[in-house]
Image (cartoon, rainbow, N blue to C red; front, side, top):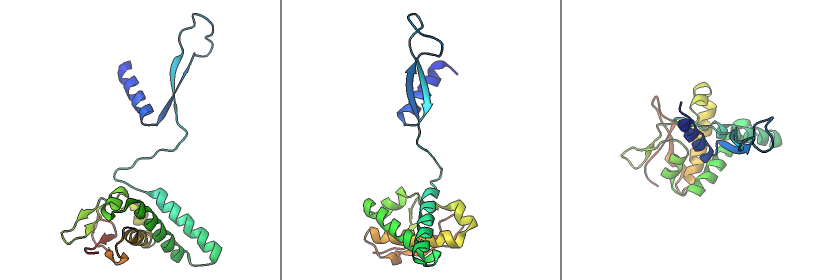
Amino acid sequence: MARSTVSFHLDRLVQDGLLAVEFHKPAGRTGPGSGRPAKMYRTVGSEIGASVPDRNYDLAGELMATAIEASQADGAPVAESLRAAAFLKGRELAEAAGDLEEFLTESGYQPEHDGEGGYLLPNCPFHRLSRAHAAVVCDMNGAFLRGAAVGCGSPEERVAPAAGAGHCCARITGGD
């Protein structure tokens, strides 16, 4: 590749926060005549992940860890603690969004109007986990979505099971 092409892409990675720039002279070169400092790139310390379509395994891990800790602390069944943690987190995140469709979009569900005032959810943010552990993950996801509905001012009954391959295990029914 041409140096200008590489430089462009490296600078774009810096602009997006994936790389950091440092200027220093190469090792062994000091004093006058040793040249100007070289532009050096290094990775930033923070973790960055991307997924297409949107997946949110960090959220699933956070919810499960919270549920396990709560279960250990109060002796409640893990499944009950997971539903409670998912509901609370869904409500908390949705309150910040304000609008249910906006929340569903930001959360990666890719909502599509169903023609009856509700939404189909073609994408599951926990897809890989739900394939291997459907009962646990779909129960958690349903509680998360019920919490989101409440956080946006809708009744939690708007969240219903959905059937169909290639879709999330839940859907949002019409009406408020």
